[in-house]
Length: 183
Image 1 (spheres, rainbow, N blue to C red):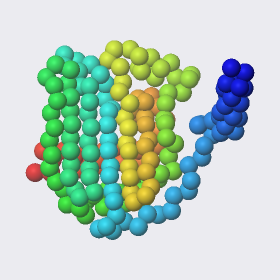
Image 2 (image 1 turned 180 degrees about the vertical axis):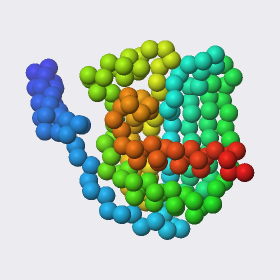
Image 3 (image 1 turned 60 degrees about the horizontal axis):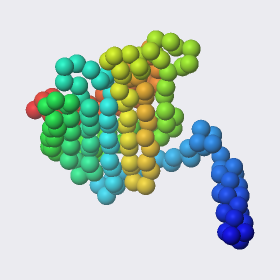
């Protein structure tokens, strides 16, 4: 029994030491990303989800736009009462590559991972909890071996201080995934 208690105590000390030596998440710096080589063989995946607000008679519980490496676009919408809808169509691979380049050139991989309300911005803090609550907008991009996700908790200008380039990227993803405008 004493050996078991000693073993548990030692394991506890080891795990505590490991956790103490790890830096807190907010202190981890993202490495400098060199310009990725984007060509027809480069793996590219771009996903945007959320944004807007959760409300109305039939609230949207999922809103995802996924652009795959081969140009396949998958749009998933799920509403509380009417269920899920998924549509799939294709865009040319060259447009996927152009979007990846636009994302890189606009500093996406140098952006913070989270843009949230300033503590002193009461209207923004309230916007996150009052009905209809804001749904965070997340953009997740993979180009080759480099991947990053950036989240804006309230995607309304004036609420959260996110870069204009983030909005430009979100708008371009919307344009490419809006099937009606592509016709």
